[in-house]
Image 1 (spheres, rainbow over the protein chains, first blue to last red):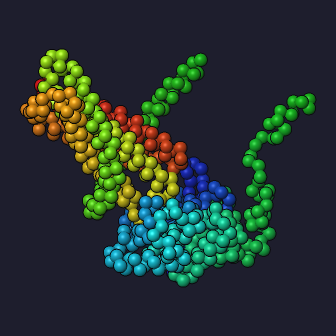
Image 2 (image 1 turned 60 degrees about the vertical axis):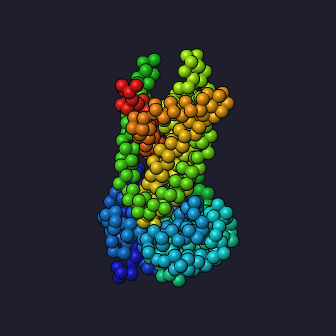
Image 3 (image 1 turned 180 degrees about the vertical axis):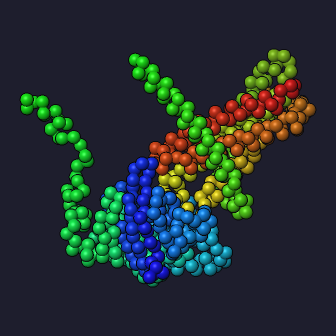
Length: 270
Length: 265
């Protein structure tokens, strides 16, 4: 059973100084799945990705990637592990001093001794997969937001990773680019047999492409399930989130003293 | 009132501790850069690329400034020396001032504001746009791949730029005193040749510029890497690079001069 699970997260806690960000997270992600992690801003979603990537150390609990406990690895083993992971950052994080081609070729040149002719073929194949073979000569500042993210996607699949993590891949995209990215995530995951973790708050787009959803609120898993279960859920938090309601378990108002008191109306009544 | 005094004292203490703390972090970062410099030498083309940005692109400001500083030195030196009838020594004055002091110091100040600020801004922006984090996630160490090549490029280009600055200055002095004013060309060069010593003057000037190169680039890469990943953070870091390196250059220059030229006629 466990060989089927690429990632196992068990009792994961993380805090900055004394502020607890994640409190006892348990998750499993199977090979070949697209899993969405949803939650409001500041709920600890990105932190979770960083813990999986070994950028941060958990306070307690563990993340297991391909049967290895990530935070127990030394630096060399961690870097070796990261070659099996790809990460797509929110705005692509392309290297601005390199062309599209060189961005995609970056990891191949850093980690392999492949001849330049083979790198060229591989890069064009990766770019073709995201539909940007014709843009290989452009510089990142010549790309639109959606194109930059597709190039970053091509870059993150450069070495055929087992896992790709997407940090809010849908933010700030027009509807066409948005569905292009969404479909690419699904297609590439299936074609390459990888696992994808999508951190997002774009409910409608992600429910179309994912196999399983986790909702995180206040550092705990508030709800989980398949897209079908999530749509049908009557749990107040999930309902509020999926339907984008203004008030509910997540309050509209930041905690404050009573309104009347703030406006100095209490004394007037007397 | 006493409350304010107490809080002021507390502030001073806080800032002092903060500065010492930061100095410690900077020193550790400097050691880390040295430790991770292997890649820069194994793949020297990474350094060569940065040499173009820090060295070659700084040439124009160095050449022009060197020329003008030399011209001013020649003019001022001539005005003073001719009062004592020793205007033929103007070549010596120009050369010694440049090679010992002005060459390394002014070139380093210009280098800090031209190349140092650019290094800080570039690394800071790479951090702000998550390029460094992305590199780390690709199992490539950003200190080895981004920081160290920039550091070594700065260290290599600084002495070369200082030398070019001095050469241009000597030529600027020649232009003003010999070509325009009419000081004897033979005495300009020969007095210079007999007064400037290779070990005491030129080598010491070279050593100075090496120190400045290390100091300026180390400050620049640290400020960039340490910059808060926001627009304000990067602009603040860039300013700090120029201010800190300028102060460090002048302070270091005093210390080095005290060691190098004490008792030298």
